[in-house]
Image 1 (cartoon, helix red, strand yellow):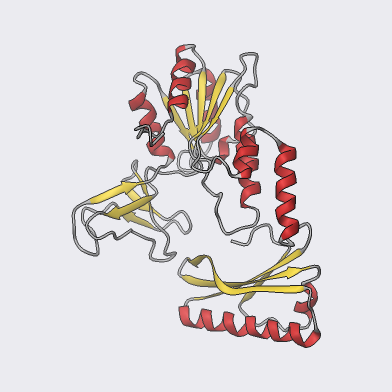
Image 2 (cartoon, helix red, strand yellow; image 1 turned 120 degrees about the vertical axis):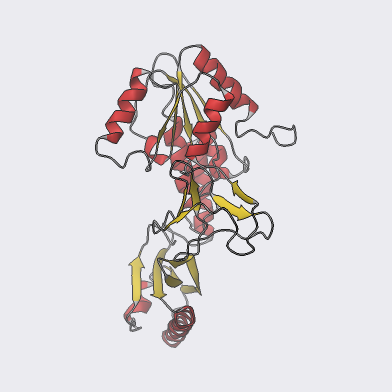
Length: 330
């Protein structure tokens, strides 16, 4: 699309499908697993990116409140008129969120009404039911939302589902990232074609050859299972091995790093003393995110057939959290 000169957030196929859908009196759902208007706020003079002072993560711009928000700790900041670092005035709002998608829909398709369903719009009691009933009545032709619209909804008049960026979450430092993306894409695609009208699902991605995206687009569960199990067996990840996730947090960055290195070294020495050749020790390394709510985070991952046995031989100091068979390592 970019090579062909299309700078819109909608591919030509999706734009045409949305046009045809609305013209036929049907409805569409657009899915983007990122709320807000812009995911990055950057100074174009010096390159400075505005980040949360407690989590060190980029702040997301929310146009409705004209504020920057941290989606980890809820830290808020008024939208700046000048860069806090160089005092330049060329502040740019980059990236994509559900707020911007709704605005783009109404600009690209005059006369089309879009409604948004994400955490920002359902804070009031009864908001979920209100949005669902409004869309079901046909008050809006396009529903824009995050993962909360991916499952459990039945709208027979929806004939088009568009996934605007399937890559979100795909490259997280977590062994279940591909599984989560596959699951989410399959769920959101299931929101169309639930009535006699049939339906169409369109997935936009920068990674069309990634096995999780390709298998989800084809709704091929067997292919995804085959490749995912092959990768996990090769790397001895669950269910072919077990994991123990140890995380240390501290308000002082140096002390956090030193304690992680010290305990990681102690684990490796105990492993060698007891001859636990079947246990791999990954790290110590900064966790993701490396800082959360003002506290720095380092982690160690134990991998093997029975890594818990090593913990039984190594006293765990105060301040460490232990997650055995973790659902996530982020």
